[in-house]
Length: 209
Image (spheres, rainbow, N blue to C red):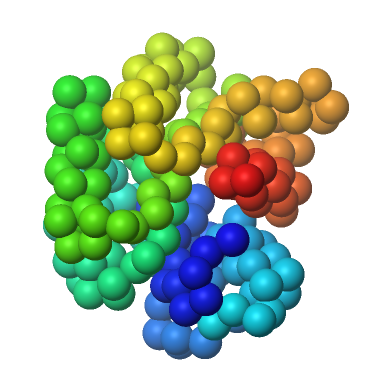
């Protein structure tokens, strides 16, 4: 799937973080309990002839501007060959909860700045851009979705502009909700259950392939 000695980095907020051990560099702890861990297991098992190095640097609560502030330490210094990025829900959540969100214009601006900075360091990096999502339960009210749709459209457009992989997580969860209610997949509407993380991992691999 990737070159033999690729460094693969998962970046984002709490959905990616998923209780990772920030003090222990061992793969089975620093990868957390979510989709990043599931994907690492799949890649390391199915392509055991490769020498992948896989990192999770998601941080709970972070917005696009928080990513930018720590980007050199938590992305560029790791010299990734593959970058998977899921960000956007806290840019909305922080606005509703404390009027400290990131508006759509600046979300687009900072997202592109991150990618441009990254590609300056490694023009050949493989980018995998993941759609922010929410489910209608828990913390999520109807007013979220119009704002979220803006962020979803921005990430999709950026993926098109950068001619790279886009993972349509919202449509994956929308389809899943035909089989089971929203809280089966994400009890609070934002943070996936283990079943939610499983379908995220499947969607990521499908988009990549």
